[in-house]
Amino acid sequence: MSNLHPFPATPASSPSLPLPFDPAMAPVLRSRMLREALPDPLRQLLDRGQIGRHSRFTDDGFADVVEDWTPPAGVTPRHAALARRALAEFDTGILAPAPANHLLGRVLALLSHFPAKATTPEVEQLLAMDWADDLGEFPAWAIDQAARVWRRTRKWRPSIAEIRALCEEACAAERALAERLRAIAMAGERAADNGGGGRSAAVRPVLASTLRRMR
Image 1: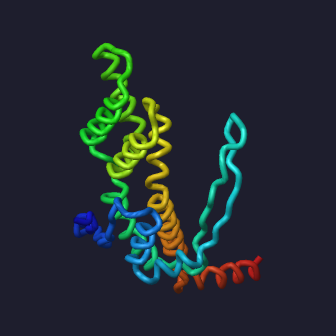
Image 2 (image 1 turned 30 degrees about the horizontal axis):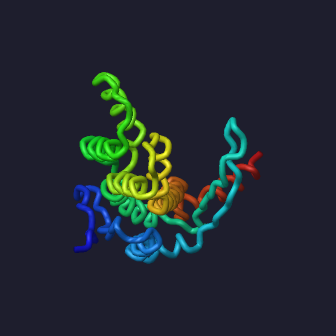
Image 3 (image 1 turned 90 degrees about the vertical axis):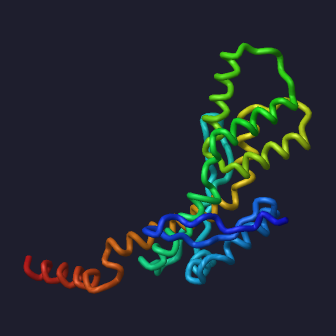
């Protein structure tokens, strides 16, 4: 049976969009399905946005190429409201951090496949806290996928950094889409703060011109 389902709605004061999501699907198909479930005005903005790329450097030198996405002109407060509704679905469902018991259970099961030298209970507890702290930002399905990939492709005990990298890869497309929706929401809210192109926005240039003539 497919895992395809809409995540639970958020409270009525902040209604969400029911976005279908199946973590078992291939990432490309999963992203396409999420995108197609968005309202048409949001899809149009996503299609018209500008993509820029720049190099990212750390203390060790070149790290990778970072992609920046900028919303097109004309984002309105209505677009912002639609984007926030979609983001609520991402934040409370699709990308919600895994429950602590699920995270620790999955990590302990994974590490059990790769026995290590005996450690004291105190050290085991500290190790578990480290794993929970360093993977706590990821959704349960991304952690599950990372563990599955490691079990099937590696022969040695994983490090936290290696599992983090697999978790980031697992949910990269969903995170990128959420960040673009967040950029749309912020652009629309700035438009609202600036008058949204309405009367207040139109009056400001007139006032500025009048003040210049009075000087």
